[in-house]
Length: 149
Image (cartoon, rainbow, N blue to C red):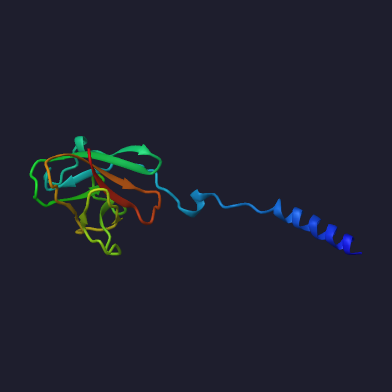
């Protein structure tokens, strides 16, 4: 009798395990593929949407733009936005991020893409070319990072 119960339980567990499916990570963290061109817009280019500061996709949900900062120690202010500063495409710092608006090399900050005045800022220690990245891996909490090129 013990053997029959053991076999029945083993069969039941085997049948159950074949039914278990792990969720796809894309369902858990939906990413955003942009449907329009985004620009790095700031005091260095009079807040214009210029093609030289257009973001390009470099990986799924990851976009980058290059910028040259020529004055070490100057606080540069900028945003990531489309041509028309559209709602949902007007990205500055998120007030939910305790690190605030100032970017530090290699450190991500949360972005809010429905903001009007929350400018991001960066103070370069040396002049040169930098890469600004926006990562939409988590659509509701995109992250902005700056690195030295």
